[in-house]
Every structure is written in structure tokens, then in C-alpha cells.
Image (cartoon, rainbow, N blue to C red; front, side, top):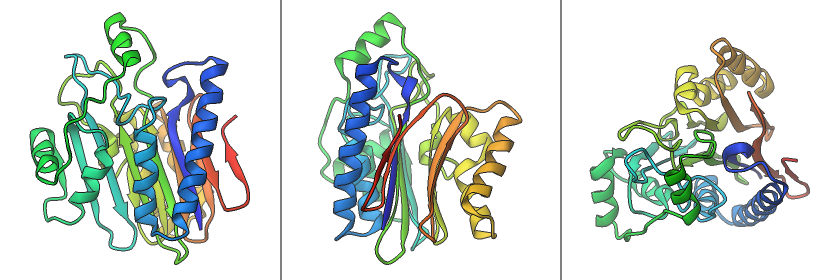
Length: 280
């Protein structure tokens, strides 16, 4: 059993030591709790569990604490993919919920599995997900003062359970100040993908991640015989051709864990039951 999760890039909100330590502690706690959950749950159930906890922590740009768009509203995106069934589900630009990943989870069980905007919100309400305002005081201040580093925040998780099954989930609050209607990579296979051979979750600039098709390319290359590290190197080399900004985490069917970022420092933590590794 293996698990790795990410919380975007460290520069997403602040570069001070206090914030860095807080994110290290948060990621360590969440990855260990999620690994314990994995003991008695599937990989799919676990990635949803982990991402929900990341969405609930205002340190990260997903769910509670999401960025504010140019019109003053918060719109979020999230997805899940099960490497066993090969089913992908997601929500795009959903408003007024605490955990977009839980809406994506419910979409796994219906025919129309990717919904956006008002349709996604209508579905959420029909499934009993209540109103929640995900805005924090810090995000409102950043919006009003038009300051902060935007576009680098997303959370995600990849897990492999005791049966060797793999799943991935990704959630984002957007890049901040974006044009309403802008689509994030997080609810596409470019940003979140899993099959029987590999699971991948991405963070960074959504447009760059989509242009490079990062998650699905890495997983496909592993399926076609690449070692996980080699799949990352080739995919990120293609990203570099246009100076793309992204990071990714992954687990393959052999239990290998890998992560890579193109710039700065991706915030991540992984755990194999013995050792926790967290960004430093």
C-alpha cells in the first residue's frame, strides 16, 4: 500500500517560514491519516478521503480557501478516476459547496459523469450536498487588494491499496482573478488520470498541463513499458519545450512513487507505512 498527495506549489500563498512549517505539518498529518484509512478501504475511497481533508484545510487552494475569480465569485473543479473500472468523473466551476470531490464521487455512479456550472450544482443539491461558502478572509483580502501569487494551487492524491488497485483524485479552487468560465485541468484527464498501471495527479498552470496532457501521457507511457521515472522525464521534457509550469505525483503498479515539478517547489507528502517524506 502506498500513498502520495500534493498541495500545489509552496509559493501559492506565501514564502514565509511559518506557512512552510504549517503546510509540512498539515500534509504529514493528512498523509498519515489517509494511509491508515487505506488499511481498510480501497484506493478509490482513500483518494477521495484524502482530497476531502485537503479541501477542508484553508492552507490549500481547494474547497474551503479557494481563490476568488475576477467577478468576485469562487468556482471550483475536482475529479476522481478509478484505475480498476477506468471510470472518470468530475465537476467544473461548481459554486457554494465545501467539498467538490464529494460531488465528483457521486457522479461516478451516473451516466453523465462530468458536469459543470449550474448543472453540477443542481446535481449536488439533489444528492443532498448543502450550501457552503468556501471563501476565507485571506482570499477575500487577496482579491480586494489584487495581490498574491495566483495560478499555482491545486491539491491531489494517488493511492495504491492492498490489492494493487490504483486511483487518483485532484481538486482546485482555480488560479485567482481568472475569467469566469475558464476551465481548469483538474477535472480533465490531463490533470488527473489512473489505470491499472499508473495513477497521476497534477498541479500548476492548468493551460500548460492541458497543452502537455501530463497525467494521461505519463500513465500511458508507463502502460506502454516506460519506467515511471522515464515517463516523467519524457513528459516534462515536452512541457519544457514551451516553458510550461507544472508538477505531478504518481504511483505505478509496482508500488514505485515519483514526483517532479518544473519550477519552484511543489508541496507534497508520501507514506509507505514506514517513512513519511514531506517537502522541505
